[in-house]
Image (cartoon, rainbow, N blue to C red; front, side):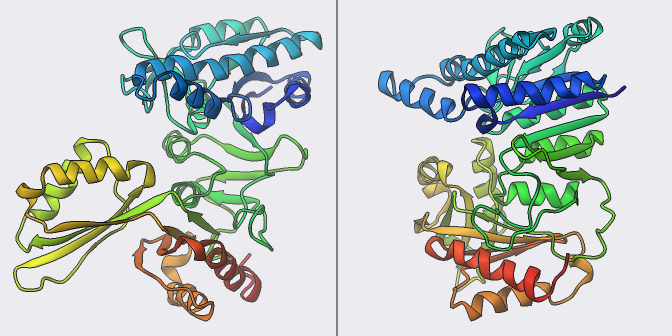
Length: 407
C-alpha cells in the first residue's frame, strides 16, 4: 500500500473534539493499509498566545529563546493527538522535529531545512506505527531548537514527503481545497480540482493562505504530489501538480490579496549607475525581501525608486536606509502601509492578450485607483488603497469568473 504524509493545521486540532476528529481521519487511512507520517501545527492561536506571553516577560527576548518557547505549541498538539490515537487502540509514536531528523541552519525564527535524517521515522514505520511529527521546527548544528517561520508546518510535511518518497502529501485545512478566491470573503469563489505548482506558488506568495509558498517551492522541486483538502467535510480536495488537465482552458486560475505590505519610496536619488544595486543589496544583507519595484524617469540629476515589502519589515527597512542615507544620497523616504496588493494568477495568461486590461477595467468601473502595477507570465498585481482591497478582489473575481466563465 501507499506511504502517505498528512498535515493538519492549527484550526484542525484547536480543541479536544477536533483532535479526536483528526485522530479518526488518521486511523481511517491507517486501516486501509497505508503507512502514515503525520505533521501537526500548534493548536488554534497557541503560537500567538506564546508570543504574547513572551512580550509580557521580555519584549526584546532573543530569537533563540523565542524558538525554544514557540516549539512547545506543536509538541502539545502532537502528544495530545497521539494520546487520542492510543485511546482508539492503534500503535502510534509522536516525535519532535529533532527526533524526526530535521537539521536546519541557524537562522532562528526563519530557519531553512538543510537535511532530514529519516532513520528514526523508518524504524517506527517498520513497526507499523503511525508516526506523528511536530511541524515548524528542527535543530541546528549547535543542538539548539529552531523554527521555520509562520507556515513552516506545511514545509515540514512536504520535506518529509520528499525524503521519504511518499506517494501523496495531504494538507488538511479549514477549507476543502484551493479556490479561485478566498471563499470566506468572496462571493462566487469556486473550488479548483487541479492547479499547477507555478500557479499555486504565485497565489501563495501573493497572499492566498491555503499553502505556504516555501512548501510549494519544495513540492515543485522534488515533484511531490500534493492535495489540499478539509479536515471537516470529507470531500475531495484540490490536486497541486506539474501539469493540470485543464490548464489550457482557463487563463486566470485565482484572485488573491495581501494587506500585510508597505510601500517605501526613496525620493531624490542620484540618477547614476549603481544606485539600485546599492539600495537592494543593503536590504538583502538584512534579509528583507522586496517585491514590486518602480523607478521613475530621471528629472534633472535625480530620480525616485518605489518598492513594496512586508509590513512587518517596514520599520527595520526605514532604519537601515536612514543609516546609509548619506551614502545613497536620497532626499527623504516616503512610507505608507495603508495599501494592499491585489493579484490575478493563471498559467494561460501569457497566451491571452488583454487579460491585464480586463482587470484594470473592472477596477476602473468600481472607482478603484491603482498605485503600482507588476506583471509576469503568470500574474498581474496592482497596489490599491487598503480600504478598497476587499471590493477590488470581488469585482475582479466577478469579471473573470462570472461574466467570462473561464473555469
